[in-house]
Amino acid sequence: MTNVNKFKSGIFAAASVLALFSAGVHADAGEAVYKKNCMACHQANGQGMAAVFPPLVDNSNITDKPAYIAETIVKGKSGKITVNGAEFNGMMPPMAYMTDADIAAVVNYVNTKFASGSKEISAAEVKAVR
Ligand code: HEC
Image 1 (tube, rainbow, N blue to C red):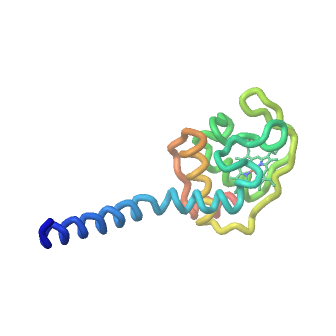
Image 2 (cartoon, protein in one colour):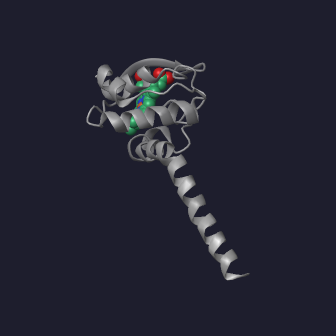
């Protein structure tokens, strides 16, 4: 390889890394917030735990309902719910201490990665749910 080609491939590698980084910021932010705040109960891949923690994956209650997901995080949830025919009657503690930006990022992550939705919520819209 000539020095010029080495230089060119170096530039290309650096540009690829930058492109990957900037494209992934939003999703990565939501994933990190999920791991920190939700994963202990809803599990790493969002499948939940039978009869204890409802799944977020393919959960038709939450698909494209970002305001509902945000409200659940801010206010918590208890009482009987049915998820795709399976019953849950547990208690999710309110997590109003999370920032609007963190809640927006995790709602968008859960809706698009787990629940096959596409609607996104902004930090300002999360504030309005509080
Ligand atoms: C301490 C365990 C726990 C943590 C942490 C937790 N949840 Fe939950 N979550 C639950 C339980 C239990 C329920 C079901 C409550 C019920 O039965 O009424 C629930 C319900 C939900 C629902 C409603 C599901 C439906 O079908 O209506 C959503 C959405 C949700 N959680 C999202 C999240 C997100 C996002 C996070 C992280 C920011 C999170 N949860 C953190 C335990 C938890």
